[in-house]
Image 1: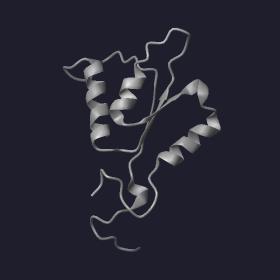
Image 2 (image 1 turned 90 degrees about the horizontal axis):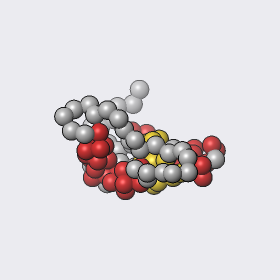
Image 3 (image 1 turned 45 degrees about the horizontal axis):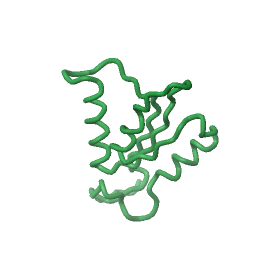
Image 4 (image 1 turned 135 degrees about the horizontal axis):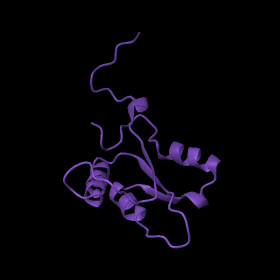
Length: 108
């Protein structure tokens, strides 16, 4: 086993957020509304610059579009499920993962 110096950048430890949602929460976990909690969580992910992708699974003809603002707050790519064949989801995830020897801006 090889020892790794604390603080060393390891690409395999890079967090990646992939959110699949139709955007209609219904239960808050705390005192705030589910919308406030969602906005707060998305904002943290965006501020920390966590590599992210959001897949909008909202079905039907009449759509509320509640996922787009979440994706924007996260700084994430917004994708609609119906436009995303299954094999492309894996490609999107791979393209979202930072590569190279430099850590992403939220690390270090």
